[in-house]
Length: 448
Image 1 (cartoon, rainbow, N blue to C red):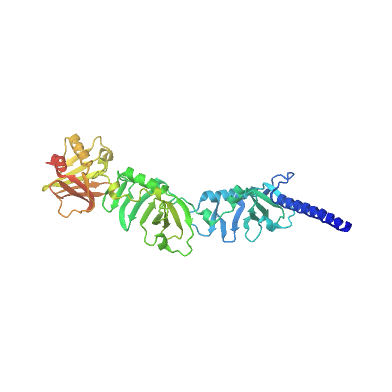
Image 2: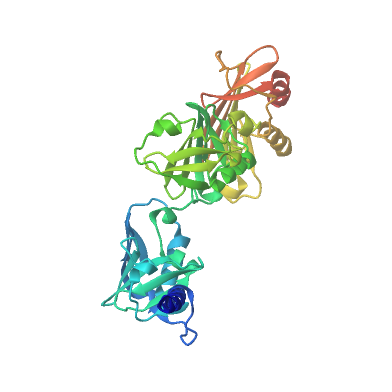
């Protein structure tokens, strides 16, 4: 009986000692993962000059990204990404060239796997000068505020801040810029929007013209510069919400096989891109899109697509024709069988004190009256807009402007539509503008 009691006592003591050992071991493990060695200050893990970097490779379990030096810059070599987010690249380079640890976890690790240094660890190989430095990034610490990191040539394991770790753990997805067009408004010189295979409008910027924007389709007319500027600002402000994983490239499921919208935009640098917009997402607040000729499919915010349903009627200028008198060399008005030919001699061009004007080769004495007539002629406003019905008869009135710069010659034909209105052709194309007959008749009474 006495031996039995002694055995019980020994078992209890053993259990207590075992429990103490396990607690102590667990505590040490936790300290190895989370605690700070207060005697160890922050250490430089890497300290190199940016200009000495020749190549950087970032390898994960799923991809390898390579950067190489091209002249004075570090450029992405692979994979191919059309539009790089330069801020992501710059932040990575700044962090990599001067990277300090937060803490030394251990200088003699017995098991590096517990810190995430497995085959899923991220490796960053930096080739600079005549040296190679390899960083290994493990897992997040239990606090989720730091990542474990080590170099290939050193056993010591450190932590770095989550912020710095995420700067250097660059992926191809992170590198893709979410800025859609990466253009300034003043760089855009062409815009076309097609909705359901029909041209909503096509506009072209003319730097030397008084009206900067000219409508090319579906009619030929001047655009309202301020309205075009508003639309362009909306277009270039468009941003990508997120990229879509689309390994099988099935465009039909995104509505991109036959897009609902096509937006073509050109810049003064010669860049030309066409954006295809397909189906809205289930929530109706965003839509799928891609650039023609590129693989990436992405999501756009539909609430920012307020310009998508604009038509030529929303952007057309009601001014029938606007120019400046200094660019005009000749004016011809054919009205009711009478042909009036005006010739302009600009004082600015001929170093003369005053401008001179001639009608059928005779000097016009009352220049003020003629200038007032010309000012009225180039400020006629349309009463209505009709882009669907094209003129079919011969012109009742024709006015021809000859310029010493763009557009050279502008022939404006006024064609009877009905008893009240003229339809207008500009250089043989429908302008979509209608003017009251009596307004034009009153204006041209000067030529009678």
